Length: 550
Ligand code: NOJ
Image 1 (cartoon, protein in one colour):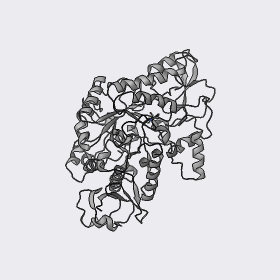
Image 2 (cartoon, protein in one colour):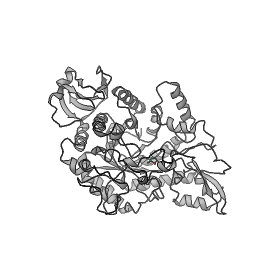
Image 3 (cartoon, protein in one colour):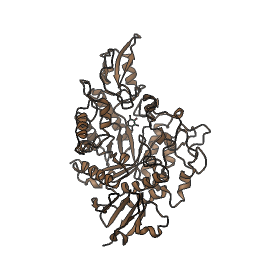
Image 4 (spheres, protein in one colour):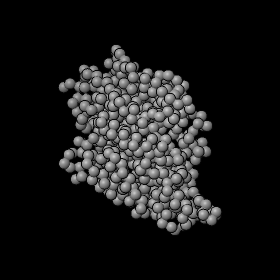
């Protein structure tokens, strides 16, 4: 076993709280109005106090920024808007001094159109070795097949050849600025091993693998029976036994570009590299696959973790949540891996907004955080989640996400969740930058009270709730044991040492059972507000942790 002699539960990532830094919107350290690596380093004490164990940095590599850096022109360097390689090294070292692990994002499914390989492919003729690193096919009247881009529209773009005539098409499962690499080409696999080593040599502790389920393609490029349906199927749990579920399962199993068996060989090689380094180096896969396929990405011969995306979409319903948790744990338990939980990330609406917005959305988001933080495994906290930020309302003219443009505005895209953080209780830019220029996405006028400064000293703030729950979750051990609450809107589970979690998703206050009335209240999502007679009941949209003495 690759994990011997220490048991897997001794690994840092087994139960880590990982904080996702979206560098351009975190903190501007050099006054140019964009966040950068120096800015991240200057806020490490803030992150330490928050109680996180690791940071994951979204891409900071050279990029024309057509997809906010997920279009990488050189995965072994730093974009000048974010700093230099020596800034990256300094951030890694400074994090380690504070006992914070560092994970970087890898984007191996595709590169940027500015990547030297793609430029060389454009300058070379059809059939050349330069084109063989990508998926170039001859085009007729129609694209080579019916695959669709995840961002909308066809997954193929036709190029103009050197002679000025329209020529071949290249595959891009995302934006046309993100040509997919051909992973059957040995240059591609070898180059990514070099990239892994490049960052491992600089001391990074782990990788977040973008579109980890997408690298392998059907090299016959056969049409898909339902290309749009496939995209949707991947976001559903398939195990409800319905006919629709069976159909969705079939779509995925016959998918031309997601979750294919050939991936296993790629990650086997990556795992060998990770295991050859000292320390617990790890990788988490961003793989949108249904629960019953999750185990394929986590094993001693594959990657270490797979993101659990269930809480990004779970309904505000205790009974649904309970089933979701059971399935998510079972899916990875079967392969001996820990589950992971995320309430939000840079691709999803912020949790406050998703759960209804306003005071209700905030109360639910705080309660859901306490549910997630009470579960086994590791948690991923997206920057600003700890402040209770909602999505920022944006005018269409402010938007930058390629999803907005590729769907002609039919989908608004992800910009609302990517607005720069408010640090001071002032007005925009709320201490995010010293620059007079506008931030890349405008911050709302009313974020002063959601700033770090305002929340820091407010005992009832979301920031202080997160600090308390991240601190206390370290005491949580053992399996999750669900307890019948007698109410489908109330979920109660226990962990070891008498620790219990209860959440009320209903509209009525829930009268707590006798054994919880006598318990010590460890934390309440309405926090430190005086609980008064609420100790007898659990109000709607509230979660509470108890320690039951036996
Ligand atoms: C997933 C990333 O999280 C997202 O932001 C990006 O647009 C796509 N992969 C393509 O790289």
